[in-house]
Length: 336
Image 1: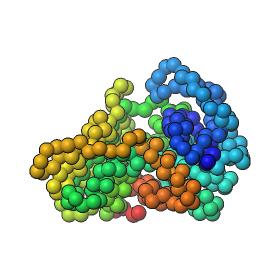
Image 2: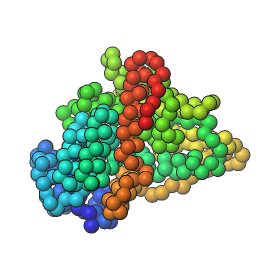
Image 3: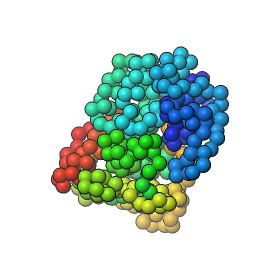
Image 4: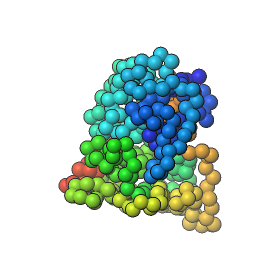
């Protein structure tokens, strides 16, 4: 039984807490947050006015990360802090000889990613980056179909992720470009990472972006260069008004069929010949599948074959190339 400590009880930390409680082979034994209300199990959902009360299940409660890292009863630390804190606390946890599951994006910069990977190598502990879309059933099934070659090569693909402006983050960190990277690094990276997971690193990118002020990225559209006559694009946007419904969708045109993820997360297949049909996918969501997978990797003492840390670093480098393209207006070559 792996004993898990959760660092950060914001939105995604609470998702990890609830998900880990459902999984066999793991037990949440400790939680840590700087906010007294959260340590008491009282929190508010994004945009909500009233607090919800939740039981922490007898987990030990800490106010400082150093206390959590010093707990000898913790095997794995789930890091759910703001992006700009990922590298610092991941490296500290690894030095304390804990395995780490760190939320996406891996860090604020690719340089920090390199430091995290080096720290994991020195510690002998495992480092996993929670890019949940790689594990989301509809996305995983679409990749399986594409890689099978049954429907031929990819002709085009369009990924889209849109939502309301997130004004609910702790101390407003999501709206600080230096701390979060805004829409491009926090939201759009989901699709950029999946494009890389699906097709490999592109040769180059061409991006356009806009926002509420000059240089601010609240909406980004990127074209990824792969083979000739392939059009691969992804769009991320979060500048919409409060109440605008979040949606993640895609359309992948193959030689003999089109795959389409609808707004209600149904995966549809439209063949060139024959009737359209819904493709069955696994039960559960990406959080459940990724955490179960990471725990199994830790038990087997192996790297993830679905989301290795080096691949998460490559996705951050991809976003950095997109930012450069959006800033300069030029097509930018990519390095993995």
